Length: 283
Image 1 (cartoon, rainbow, N blue to C red):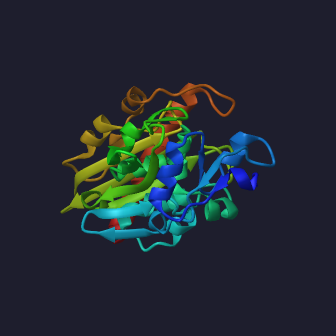
Image 2: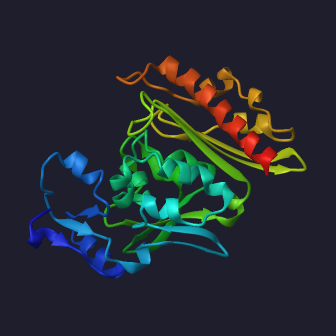
């Protein structure tokens, strides 16, 4: 809750952009991160609530790919009829807090919060996700890997708002998967997490997209490890501890040491690929 004089809920994107140009507003959707950083029972205003803008809601697919509106929730992702390539994203959606958080929290909010442990980022990276941004000068798009610039930092400029996360049609091929390592089974901030999307043609890996999160300032793709998989049958043992460690910048914190994170990420990635191998063999 916040002071009604400081609370704005426009019903058009232009109305939201106009209010943003006045400055000082904090953008709110699910508020699952906003309340946590606020550390008070009420939100200090002014608050710009974007959940009343119809064009920012929902998930839809067209000729360009899959569009996840900025106000689409994790529950929307879980319930959506998505291609197998998005299976990792849907698995990650089930790991975002409890059911109540999934009902309120948004995919766009997860990337804008830019936590190194954001569950949605690794699977979105394997899907070549692009962030659509609107501002006074029009609309621009940035690859997700360029949008998140560091812990709690993004390329969003003052007066801009994320309107959607877009997955290109070309990245909707193949099968996706996601695994998360934590101190307990659920409701946990990850020690490491891995996502993968594999495209097989005649039993041979034609495309490989691998990403690791919670093992550095930002989640990252692993291009060298991907390259080692392409052109051969899917074999998780091709993922080595050394190759994964070379791609990461893990940190020590209360949840794990950097060394444990590095080894854990490699093993988790092998398990992710082994699960994908089982899925493709069963298909």
